[in-house]
Image (tube, rainbow, N blue to C red; front, side, top):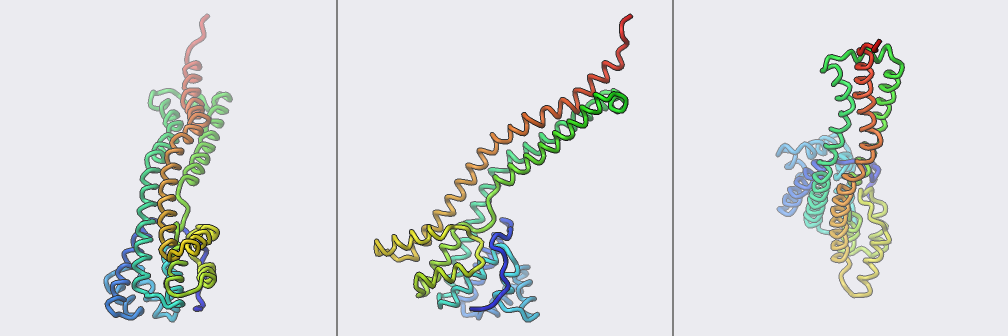
Length: 303
């Protein structure tokens, strides 16, 4: 097996990178099917202005092996490098494999786009509400009250502002954590099952296919027990394992899309917690309390 640089399977990637990778891989598949050898295909793709292909070609010119040059791009390119290595190891048709990988990456990117769009509204609302306490603090200045003087002279007002700022910080951290947990995990759902399907369709035994995929730095996190259950079903039903594995991978991507939308729906409700516990009290402490103390301080006491 070719020795190359291994990267963590959870390397982050953007959806735009996944779409770019899918387009590039599709073009590579066409070039290979037309008869171009891999190195020439990469150079042709680089000549079209593809920045990733240009980076790969630059590494090839520097003496780096092809698989290491592909994997060094990170993100979805790690999946491509794993599929490329397995296909060449077991003798699977490389052009056909690349077409399948391009479709997989495009499907995964589409699912991630759906989740990102669903998260956009609650995330934007949460970020907007986080500025509400500071807007309340500026309200006193806009109305002409000596808010700064009250904060400096009155310990109660200073303590109110300090506590309000602390609540704003807690709300920001709380909201950021909720948003981070709602986002889809990095990686391509179902990619391991797709790679096992490549190895099996290329003539590798089940054990060898699982070993090849286990040694690959693929970004998918589908558990091995699910893949083995599909393989057991294939043996019991006499159905080609590759087809069942690809169907399982497609189902994994569909489930990821559904779970992402559900997380986005739950996020809208969960964001009410930092709003009620931190943001609204911070608004009162930063905006209303100094304003009231300023009014009370400027009102003469009755004789």
